[in-house]
Image 1: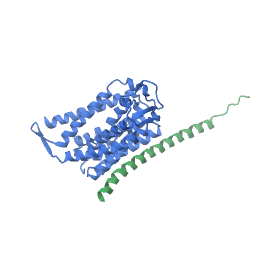
Image 2 (image 1 turned 30 degrees about the vertical axis):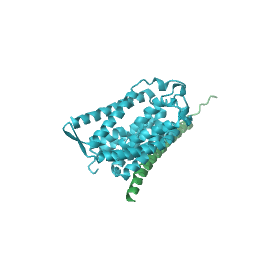
Image 3 (image 1 turned 60 degrees about the vertical axis):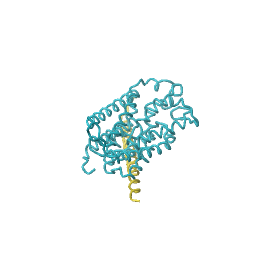
Length: 54
Length: 299
């Protein structure tokens, strides 16, 4: 039983680790994309309006 | 492995992870010999622990390729039965070799398992390396499937064996691929996995590219899932036999999962020809290291 549990551990732990790292990196990428989008939308809002009817 | 230093293990794991993500292989063909040659890990433990590490790396690489929409999962599923049989035979054979003690060759005493396994590695890698240095024309030409892979008009050797039942592979634009052929491919990769501690990618990658006409990217993505299906039960089998050092495996894994992400993402930025040639160079470098060590042991 002890050997069986150890064998299960040797399989479950690395698979969960790999999935967790993959998910973490996906979230980091999503966060980076959102930051770029927020940054570009702020820059658009701050751009001065040009009055063509002087 | 109380004396195994952490930093070299982390670096080794990272390098193997990049190769794994880039080429859809487990990296075991490099990892197992390097664990034995560089860190003195017994071959049986290097095989088992390497497979344990590969389970994590393969999971990470497969999920990344799935995000990128690459690969054909049906191939991995159809190889599964053969893989299970294969790694069971391979693992039993390894266990027998490990119990054979040492042989005397040319007046030198060499562990039997080292002699047999390193010779087997050289033979397998030599065949694979030669294939990867051959002309890439046939797998890059012809009408491309959704994943840029070749269609049946420039099919590889294995695709011409129409042993029924047949299956279509829509993700790579192929029709009429033999299920028994995929099953036997699984058997061969499983055997390599159980005996040598490789994920089977060194055999599967050329089989997918030259045998079935996959593009390098589609082959790497497909191989990631097939690898996962092979190494998970193989790891279980080796752990039951006492061949897995979990601490060693997790240290390697810490480096390799990050490397696998980098490697998988890099496949979208590199050409298929460049990837293929790079893989060939890597394999031939591994062969050189193994031959030098064998020569030193028996010379």
